[in-house]
Length: 232
Length: 232
DNA sequence: TATAAACTAGGACATATGTCCTAATGGCAA
DNA sequence: TTGCCATTAGGACATATGTCCTAGTTTATA
Image (tube, rainbow over all chains, first blue to last red; front, side):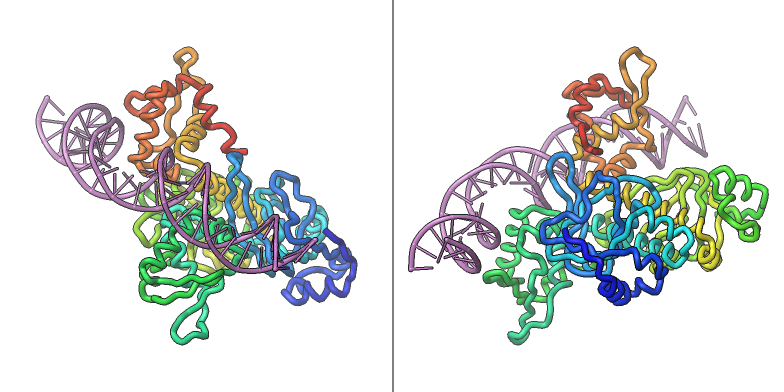
């Protein structure tokens, strides 16, 4: 992790996502850029949070490690995000891990400072409320779906969601948006083995074809039949 | 649902849980008591939230209904709780249903009014942030456990958590804290059938005995072995 | 007290999903 | 180019869990 104090860049990032207009200038002066390399942890669970971040660049994953060695991928982070809002007023250790997948840039400030500032900055507090509400809503949805729909439906829904109009005629090609199938399996709350099994069944049913690292949807109707109504 | 305008009782409830000191008197004057009977819905998902509540009495359940007809029980509510914090600043429809299990009393006010008031009441905003943070943390934990541990472990953990020192010598008796096994199965994110199967296996292993509607733990060691470390 | 409704118990079976392996393949670095 | 590592592919098997039923018990209520 590297720390930069280039205040122009801090300003630029905070402005880009509308954070700057909420924060007092005096506070912005105290903020620094925190740059994390792929694989580095931005937040570790069970530790006391010390930094609060405005997440402005790169991709990372939020996950929990359970004591049986399994992990649960909660979601991916892409800018803009807020890191540290969950714990800021409830004084508890971090619940999740946040690990950089690409090079990630955050604008950071100590938890005490942001807490102090928030106490008299209602716009900041409202921003926190909004962020927390959205996090809760999306996590609620994701985990309900993971718990109550079989992988077949979740995968169909996922493919339908990330597919883009392809070049080759009617065929719709979907790049997987994750680095590899293991990561996709994690994202979908399943195992690599079961994911490949399910992909194979899609192939057998003529729903998709797959070559190399690309899945092409060849029967959108069937796919949507399986994906139907997962996300109400 | 019945509405009462008895301002003394409003005051009493808000004071009891420390809400009164956060709210301006003018606002308290506008609040009413909303009393729900068992089975009635306090909040319905997909509807636009109109009321914001301080939940001050009774037991209810928070659940999601999915489009395949299944439901996911997220948690139970017992006072004090805040209802409507998730949606207040993010302008989205309710994500969950909230259904009264007993007679439930809430102190309510319209969403517009609380939103307007919150904009200039930072203590209220901080309360909302705290409530949201705790909700997110607890739901995160619950759903990770539900997704990654088999029912055997979750049930063991649950029994260990709710058991109380019993009257009969070493035996520890646990009243189930839910109305019936169906409800407990829902709470644990499983089916009634699988719950009874798991209870039977506990009986066969000599971990518990069960008569009528009471489960008695007779081998705490074994139970804790199964429950171990679910909640880190 | 009698009778219905709610609840408990568990068999039989199907399915979703995990674990463990082994082989094949592709991409990248020496 | 060669060889290694990451990734993909899939067999074999075990387990967790769901669905559908039917029967026995308890509880509530008329």
